[in-house]
Image (cartoon, rainbow, N blue to C red):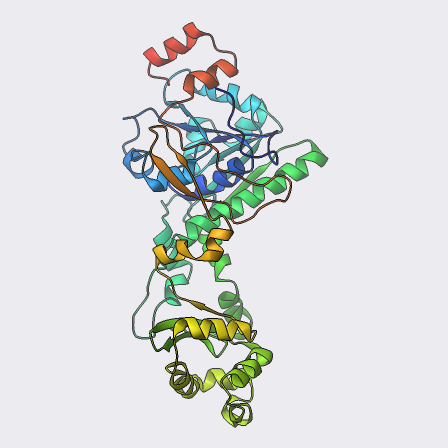
Length: 398
């Protein structure tokens, strides 16, 4: 079997993927969809007591979506001889990605200094819960823990609900995205210096970075963000409103949108109301404004208002459940979903990359690999004989 080639954009690069769960695989998925030769390196079945968490359900939608376009090599890094195989792979690679606790790579002899001795051009990307150093560096980290520590749960939910987790893995996904950006930057810099470097991101720092304006409000204005439900904390009217047959979102922030909204609703008097003269006042008097808007919006349907508001230049949209989301005509037009059979010919569906390139777009061309599906193939590529590969299998190294 030839190498999986999803795109021409990153075709020259080989990535060794030691990562697991979500943050690391999400990072590597970006690279493989854009054409990097990704070799997913994982322990043989039964070696890792936590394998059910990140590798067992290989034919389920989540694993398939995270690990498409990759090849799989099994390697028990605790076995004699395994480190030699890995370092031989490092000689052929451009990037290594891992999301172990910071101390593990040092114990295994796979820290950046050890890799750089074998290949000075190697880029090591490390994704951790709390960072590579510091008082919490040794702690295990999961997305929900970071949502709590990173402030997200404090601003999610309604005023009287108590902290609420977001419905998706914000810390995991953002840490993977930032790591991928770091890898691409390191590859660009390597063109100047000829040297690799160590890239690292953490779930905690990434989650805090995603807080963005909420964190900046506190740091610079001493304005402590709180839970405001479906309302925007600093803009109004912006949030969830009720039509005759359901709810929808509008985003009428800024004076231009506010004027267009009042004109559409034929309420010019609101433009002169002293409680609504500025956006800050509309936030302060949000309850009064919401009551007035709800009376108007109850007069027609979600479809009517979404269409009318957008035609008037005021951002608005329906609130979909997941099935409705995938049925939307614009979502279909964007090619959000790609489909192809897995290794057992079961049709699987994959969420495509949200960024594209005009000449070298990302593609989904291969399902997630079976456990160790490409072990012999990869070992042959780096020069091992049939007899050596058989011995590796017999000794439990692969």
